[in-house]
Image 1 (cartoon, rainbow, N blue to C red):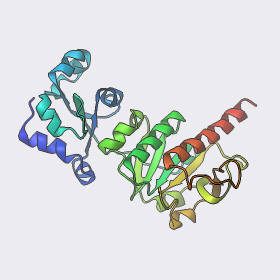
Image 2: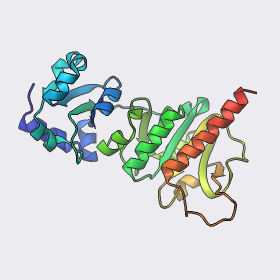
Image 3: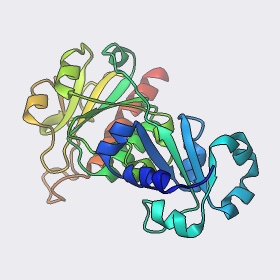
Image 4: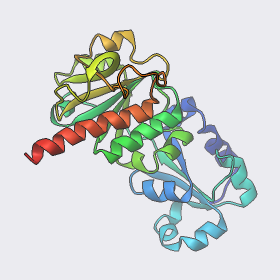
Amino acid sequence: MELTASLRKFVMSLSSARRRREEGAFIAEGTKCVCDTIDAFSLRYLFATNDWIDKHSALNDRYADRLIPVSKKDFERISSLSTPSEVLAVYDLPDYQFTASVADDELVVALDGVQDPGNVGTIIRAADWFGVRHIILSEDCADAYSPKTVMATMGAISRVKIMRGNLAEILNDCYAPIYGTFLDGESIYETVLSPTGIIVMGNEGNGISENISGIVNNRILIPSYPPDSVTSESLNVGMATSIVLSEFRRRLITDLNG
């Protein structure tokens, strides 16, 4: 196979969320990102420079029918990075479906209007670290399969199933506990936490939206320290998600250890 003008145009178009949805495809770029994801998704194309191909012969042999050698100059044209790497994979978009019963058996993260692709990627990475295997995105969230988000997950996107849809409808169908972070919530260190359920994290500037806050039945707070001291106005949503997940898992480990 070779890089044609139409194929180059196709790859470059995948920087657009609309085109990713229309084509049912997304890209992963960089050696670590590609090596971490190549066995998790259906591969369409593998673009690589000759130098990279020479260094990864075993991987290239497995996917020889989808491998397309690319010059460094052409790679600069198709790359979404300011400093292009030497390998880029095009995968089929996965089609995961969420069922409410999942939250009865495990912990699920739901993102309500998180806008920054880097934050979404960080949250996917944190979820992977803490053993969360399902994330729900509201329809106004940043796309989890944008090149920036995929890169930010550091391969975690290959182990976390990500669904996108009407968050209010999805949550209304759930009987599991639904947690959300609020400034008027109860301290996460003092409230009862379930080992299963859904944790909702809100928009970077506005927090959890009004229509979702009415569905949340457990309002929690990450308290600053010391109490009532002057601190930053808020935590980054990626950082806050990591703190919340850490406390949920700490409780679970403590309970399991008696």
